[in-house]
Length: 306
Image 1 (cartoon, rainbow, N blue to C red):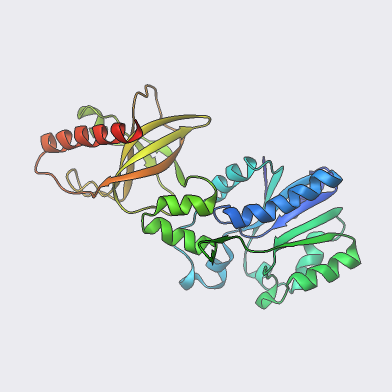
Image 2: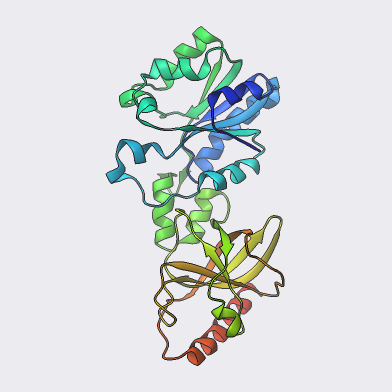
C-alpha cells in the first residue's frame, strides 16, 4: 500500500477516488466500518479506495496538554494495518495550525476540487474545519454541488459502549488485552526495530531482541508470554517490559526472547503481541537468580502456548 504525504499525490491514483476520512488511531472496528463503506463503493463503481488521515494527531497540535502520550499505532504501523484491509493508499496530511485554521468549506475545496472523487466515507459524528464547524450535513451539501456521494457510518458498539481509541488505550493500560482485541478486531501488537543491546541475555543463555519502542501504547510492565512477527512468520516467546532493575535500572525497554528462533534480528522490524502476563518485574540478588527465573518464565510461557 502506498503512503502519500501531499494531496497532489491523489492525482496519481486510478480514478474515481473513494476516500475514508478520519484520524483512525489503531484502525479499530469503528474505523474499519468507515473503511468498509468506502471499499464497498469502490467495488461497485471502480477506481481507487484509500484513507485520508492527519499526522500528527490533531489534538497534539490543538490541545497538546490533553493529547494522549501514546497512540495505538504509529503512522508507519497504521499504513501496514490499512494495507491488510486492501486499501490502495493512505494520504497522511500534515496537521498544522494553517490546516487547523481552514474553514470547513475551504478545507473541502482544498481537498476535493479538481479531483474525480466519487465517495467520502466518515463516521456520522465526524467534524472538521476551524472550530469543528464542518459536519456530515455540510459534506452532503458539498457532495450534491460537486458530484460525490457521502456515506456516514454509525458508531460500532462493544459491551453497550461506543468503541473509541481512547477507550482501547485505557483497556491496554489496564492489561485487558482480550477486551482490547475484541474492539480492535485483531490482537494488539506494537512494533519496533531491533537494535543491538548489551547482549546480556545471550550470556545468560536466553538471547533477546532489544526492540526500540516508539509512541505506541504499552500494557503494564512485567514478564509476558508473547508472539513475535517478522512479515508473515511468527514465533512464540517470552519478553520483559520494564526497566531491568536487576541489571542496571535502564530506560524503559522491551526485550524479547523468541523460542526456537535462529538468525540475526538486528535492523529488522519486529511486531510483538502481548498474549499473557506472567508476573511483575522485580529485582533479583544476582544474575544467577535472574537466570533461574528466566528459565521458569520461559517454561511458563511454553506451557501457556502448548
